Length: 347
Image (tube, rainbow, N blue to C red; front, side, top):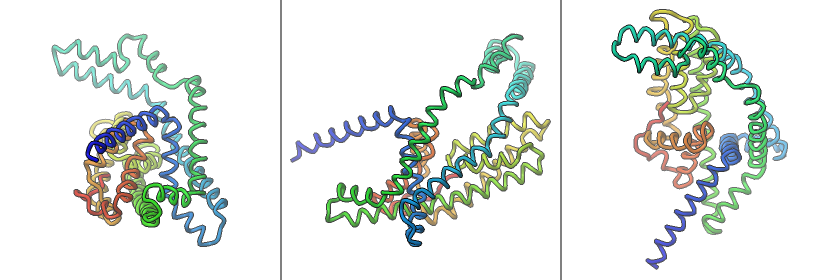
């Protein structure tokens, strides 16, 4: 008996490594499928709501899928002005960065080689190299044409998985419960699946409300400062705040560069300072007090899960890492997420 235990453990470990390698290689398919399942779990209460009104499951799943894809499309369209503004201001940002390099060269002596490397990294080496590097750094039409089929394929994989998961999620829970715990524990495990649905849905509803308020507050602050496209920056803050740590960091960098382009003097840091103040208030006071009522996660576990997700699947991995961790905790023990040490949810 004792000799078989190490063999079983080694077999499970090898199977886990092989499975992780397989889903990493097949990330173009596995990542959108996982995202679809996570989104389906978040929106599962809507299916229950439609069921109370006796709407057929197929119609309910179709309505939810159309509304979800429409909302994603609207968000992409809303973010388009910011993407074009960033593209248009890249030469200006490069010029401002080069100016900072020249100022630093006047302050720091004896570092000519290092300054030359910095100028080359920023596209400032030579009079003829600046414009060419700027153009080559931007995606071309050919790049877009090559990426379009991949993106379209991922959207189709997401939509199909999302629809059929909503359509058959109860059957999936029942099959998994019988597979994991047998007939005796089937009802208990199915209840854990439903508890995980409720927990994740409440978590994301609360987080969404917080992110909307953060985006609206940032929009107001940027309007007072006079930064162009304040509502687009507010939308970006709303979306990026779902990706913990990385999202706020990207927002801070973007607002710093935007302030560098549009303002002078101390006003350069006004946009990023306003965002950092709002983010600090949200992360330290608002989110712990509201999210802590539904779920409490260890900050180290959140960070490790986020880093692993970003390394494993890129942006989609960063989005799904936290909900997957919440779902796993709820399935193992539906009180784990409330007993976990360090009960704060960083923003």
